[in-house]
Amino acid sequence: MESVRARAPSSTANLGPGFDVFGLALDAFYDEVTLTKKNNGITILTSDLIPTSPEKNTAGLVVTHMKKKFKIQSGVEIKIKKGVPAGFGMGSSAATAAAAAVAFDRLFGLGLDDITLVASAGVGERASAGSIHYDNVSASILGGFVIVRTKPLDVIRITPPRDLRLCVAVPKISVPHKKTEVSRGAIPQNVSFIDSVMNMSNAAAIVAGFAKGDSQLIGSSIKDIIVEPARQHLIPGFSQVKKNALDAGAFGVTISGAGPSVIAFAARNSNLKKIADSMRRGFASANTNCEVLVCKPSQGAKK
Ligand code: HSE
Image 1 (tube, rainbow, N blue to C red):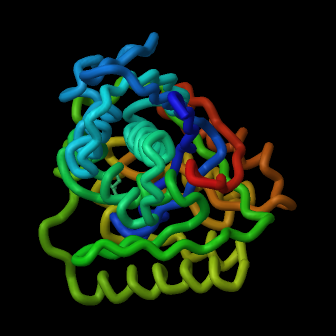
Image 2: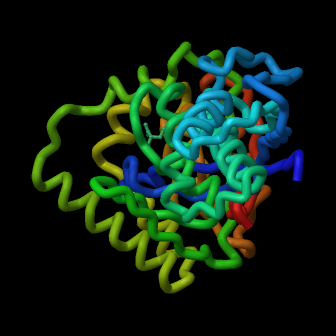
Image 3: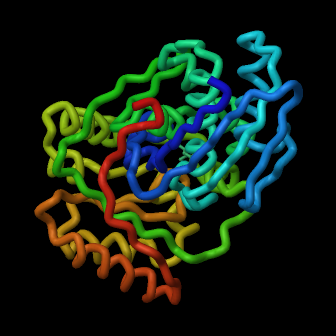
């Protein structure tokens, strides 16, 4: 095979209390990466507004790393088509990194295991987020709901309930350069023991919700008293968006990843249009337009 194309989905990280630990692949948007064997070097082709030098490009970093690690001599041409909006807490760089790692594995017939794929994609994600966290890349590669542990890196995947639905409101605001770094800067250095117990109880209930296939239990456990309060000032109208969505029947609402998108958890039989409209109105109360996507969990790039 001389050329391989992989598609990787958007994702939401944290799901409230699972900071840097939980991820969920979402079928809202996809990135597409096509890798082609060439005589030498790494070249990047894209019509999107992203860097095209391999050392500054997420897919370029992943391919450079994998070529070296797996001793691949061949050159590689990387074609990137972005679908996931960058900088909105939807796992944009992770989707590019995930698609690149999966395509590389297939192109060179490496047969890598899940953890090696996640670790390889994490190299690209690290460069754009400024820190190592594997929540988005794991979800984007493996699909479904993931629990990430580090030292050593390990990922547990659970297939989400079939009726789980999400409303993601993506506000039309300009996001700061290196948004994830800025957003991580808002997180408290120390947390009280009582607060950590509260967050842990809800995180455990979310895992139980996925294990039991109970969308209501998942959604009603999306409660984070540590990171969300520290970050919400970065999102205009956040409290109103959250209140409106809960009033409209969402089971739980929180910041998607490092924000500024807001995600509401619901089920197929919820009034999804009402929830979406209520989120739009919430942002409008802060003079902010937004796009609301009603979506489902996605299978990952590896499927
Ligand atoms: N868990 C990370 C954060 C996700 O919230 O900072 C960033 O994409």
